[in-house]
Image (tube, rainbow, N blue to C red):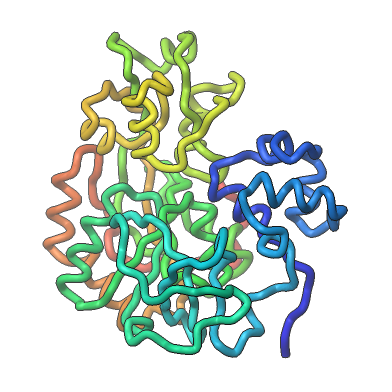
Length: 362
């Protein structure tokens, strides 16, 4: 039976742009409380408010506020609304559903599309043969393209990795439009923290965490000097921020404390170094790997656990099983050990079933 509950994409579209609720509220001439209520379905906006929000997001009103378009279309489901038509898309089968994904620049760069859609209200009738051979991930690991290169060579499957924060990736996993979500919301002294965070974000059991790596997170600085976390706090550096819901935001909050949030945010680790090298900012949180690639000063702050989360039913899916096998391979283990700031998890390649009794995000 079709589910026709009122539905909006405000939160997903806002977070994909790296905006806070306050930033969207300012752009749309609304209150932050109103944006929060709209996102949680507690408030149906007036027509003029809905138009301002959609215009601020660069979308049509019907793409932001609609009856749920995903679950009741026989030709498959759109993962999310496209910004405009016509647009290119990929196809992948996730569980029992055929998912149509509007294309974007991925962690692997620009990938060939499966088709072009002229009207998003009509899902494509043709099913691309690649759909059953496509693995869809979402994470912010800047080295994931190396993993997927090994994966594609060993398995013959097509991987697609979307650039998303930990919480954005978990939301896509919860919605059933991807196979695997990356998460790094735990420090290395709390290796069970990602499972705890996943349990809360997914709202129940039935998922597993696949342990992968630990990495060094800190602050990239464009100015020369002997920087420490204390001197960073006292400085007048121009910061590029990280979006709410990202593991990097936790590191940023640890460094800046109660200082005002930066006015601009970068949605990825490489976005931070691009802002610094372009002169838009002097400092920002990222991984040692991308900082050293950009030849910037790096102030280490903490080590974090990076894991992958997946639905337990998909463990036996050949595409997911091939990914697990790749992560357990000697080739990938040697690769991780060679990357600046990375090291394999002590339990790399092990699956941890997410328990229903985990209650708090660390």
